Length: 536
Image (cartoon, one colour):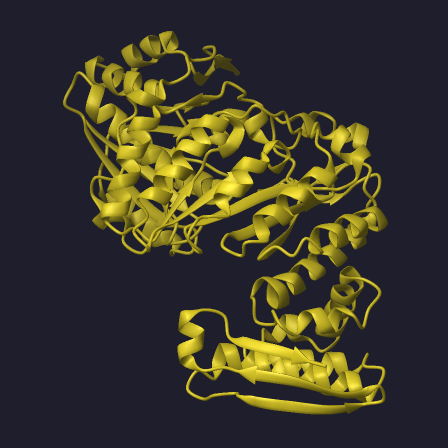
């Protein structure tokens, strides 16, 4: 029997650890001789090419991994595969979309079954059962005994009950053949589950936190280090929820640093201790990057979504992690949460923005089936799109127009802040406005007014756009001289790598002379940040 595991990723650089884990687990423990193959595509691939490739592989079973970014494409593939192969193929599906909305895949008879929750043990049982059964009818009877499945029977969906959680130490290492992952991000998990209960997050459903043996983790991380993998992204939902586990891993990658590999962690700042902060401050610049989901700074909103922390503590942790300048820090906000109108959100935006992370992500609430916030949507007046990724359209507190405005502001923070193209000039530009939010709001209005959102200007063109924009708000000549010069300096740092921008720029102000001294060369850029000083 041939089984094809299908993943449709958002981008080529991404991989799907789920299908590799299913295959690795089944290959290690299965009792029969099923042939299991993996096929990975992206949502940007031509649809007909994906469909043809799947059909021509001529598998007996095709199993799809479903997520919010691929569910529409996968449903179409399943529908067309059923039309082409009819009853010649069994179609299975798993992943978050199947777990929480099995009816999407079962009610129209396209899928034979859906796997709910963690799939390794369930998939193993399915493989062995399918191989042992002599007919489809026998298989349909036998699978009712397997826990963790959703089936369509007699006009209704039958759930066979929750399966036992998987022992993480039984899961084989996924990356023995690194050639499969050339130029792609390596995803790695050292724990599953989350101790928190955020109402908008699917991880809140599975609160059974468990960890892979830390000695096994070290051995596997050493494999990445030995092979000089560029980035390893931990997918642990809250990496630092266990102090000892987190510290052991941080110490190991520090003591065995190869000078190349970068490790990404999702952190809960509210539980991070001062000695953890002190330790990560000692790491090589570029060894670690951290993502912290703040989501809101409004206390009432945080209560309504079951997040319990003090924002003052978050600011303390962010400042502590940031001050050494060695960790790339990524902070998140979510627009569309309960009890947050655009004015309250503006306060959250400004407070988080002023924490000065390397990346500031303004995201939007996704109303995911199975979450607490989905159940309370009517209470909160939350209306979301019926199509993936189920993004909020309006709430009791925020109109559709408000959210569109925030979408535009999000685009501006991505283009002008997260790009790091204006890292030296932005602090001066911001002073022209009452707050960072006001600046990005005006910038988005200007951007749309000039139709740059349609024209999609190049990265270099953004410097001219910014100069034209700030000229509209500069109040006097002195500001003009210093701000426009800093924009030119930022452009030089990023795009004029073959020339030097070096020297002293003197400006005569009413209160005296000020000098801005730039010293930049390719050598300085390679060794670290270009140097500049301001002399009064």
